[in-house]
Image (cartoon, rainbow, N blue to C red; front, side, top):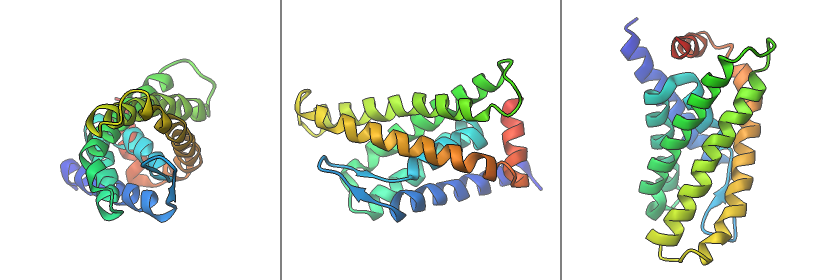
Length: 180
């Protein structure tokens, strides 16, 4: 099958999974957002699909979850922030795997990739709240603890799902291709 078609299909699948994982367990926070497992799929998009397809897939899937959940005002920021988080998480994951680690140390790569993507999420939503929503730099600090918890949920979800999803032949092949 055509490699571009496979990448498009996998990207659409990961976007849909990201959207569903964001919406299915949806815990509102006292700040403007909500806690969900979608960030785990954002990270996995970057890991399995690589920088371009992973970023597009994660951004679109997360943005659609905002649109469908009634957070339309956040959708443009979410598209950019989650795409950048998938990009950073995937790049860090693959850089860590190039180090001489003991076999089976993917969990360290997932955690460090998740932390790098999480830094982008926390900083991105802080800046969005402070300057676009007009909360100001001090009031927007209320978002930070919830986004840190959100990042932790995403890392845990990705760490649990990565070994399972890595057994799917098309994803395993895609993961292998991004390592070259």
